[in-house]
Image (cartoon, rainbow, N blue to C red; front, top):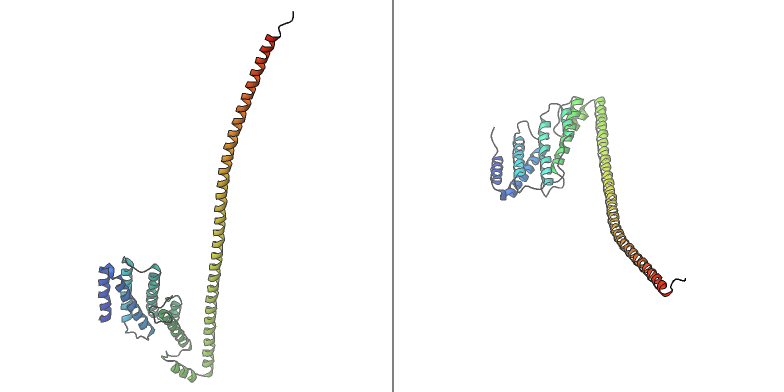
Length: 277
């Protein structure tokens, strides 16, 4: 199996980027270019002899590991998005290796495409477009298996084959299309309901967070007010204690003065008025 020149170039750039921390941006640029190339190849119709995508995805995994280990690695959100897209391409390759169209469609349902465009000029994430194309292709293969017809490469040939079928088979095909469309609508409605529930849950969580924050602020103010009241009460208690001590001292001195005055008065009275005989 030969190796693509572009893959060798990307690998050499990856090694050069990992050896120098200040070239992490070049490693990320090479990773984004290779990821965009893989998404472009995945969106095209490939034959069984196509081997580039699998090799490129392997190189993407190695470059992603190098990005994680680099000191100048991207933000965690960007790394998560890169990992999501690489996992999607790996799952797409594994789903294509399955034999049955039903198994391919089921595996395709569990694939999670990227949420943001890889390059700036993309209006929709390429992995999401690939996911939709793969889903439509698996649906067509399932319909062909159920109807017992061969795989059709184009929509016009499929329409001609359907017109050439007997009336009952055309009705069955129409019913199958209606059933598939109904399930597709149900899935979209379910996804929309889940999105609304997640949005409502987020709003309720934010409202509860605001209420808890206000309660914490009120509790903090109450605790500060209680501390201030305690300090004031302590100060007033000390003042009252000092005042009480002063009152007791003045009363004691007053009693001593009164007793002394009475004693001196009695002595003077006895001296001035002698005892009668």
